[in-house]
Image (cartoon, rainbow, N blue to C red; front, top):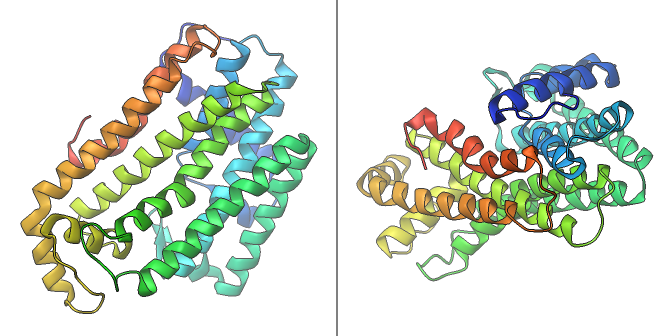
Amino acid sequence: MENNQSIKLDDFFNATRCDIEEKITSTITDEKIREILHGGKRLRSLLTQLTFKVCTEGKETHDDYQRSLESAVSIELAHGASLVHDDIIDKDAERRGKPAYHVKEGIGHAILTGHRMLAIGFNIALNHGKEVAKLYVDSWNEVVNGEISEVDFNNNGHKETTIGSTIFEAYNKIIDLKTASLFSSACEAGALEANMTGDILKVFKQYGREIGLAYQLADDLVDLVNGEMIDSVIIPLLNRMENKPIRKGSLKRWEIKRKFAKNEDKIKQYYIDEITKHVRKAEEISRSKIIPKSSYRGLLIDAPSYIINKMLSEISITI
């Protein structure tokens, strides 16, 4: 979406999503990778473009805008690769209502295709300069650390579980590394594409992180309310609500579901409070005096609640 002021957030996202799709189509020639990327919400890359527009105040050239879209494509490639690997680790058979990539193509092919996506994304980042390339590598390192922490957590993380234990802190750390880090980097990337330096990069980095934390909590809440028992979520939550340690394997699945149903209202309220906290923090950050004033800054303020409420509408919750 080129220089067009006084626009609503919904319109901005819809128009920008079309631009991102066009850039993906013109940049990615591998049909298998296009298939993996198909159907994504593009939230991270949309935030990249919003941050870019805020920093340029909508005064960038056509070429600069197209270059920023390339950066958005690299983010989609990294995110898509993480989903392919996630589905293998979690043994998920579906993704976006269709068979997961590893189910259709085999685990070996899926792992290698994920690696190829990362390589293509890194090559794009490298062409955008050392700072963007370093951001790409550092971001992926955080995502991988989050994945490893989650695997370790699900394998043996329930052994020491009390309300005050590190088990719930571990869950929050996983969210921070696995999800919030990529949102954070997406916003920082937009600022870098607009040639920003110094403290403003830190502002956008934290803005994205707060949205990412709220997003993952909202995603988990939707899954829990819809009946999905997420291992890295449910037992820590029950420990917090009942103040009783639960060891992995000590309860059957139906017993865990019964305990969850008993505490569902308290758990939902806990999530709503935490999600609201991160959304409000992101809104506060978006009002920083060092962010350029333009009509795009208003979109930056509106974006956190817009993104989260879109997700929570599935379970009829608004924050």
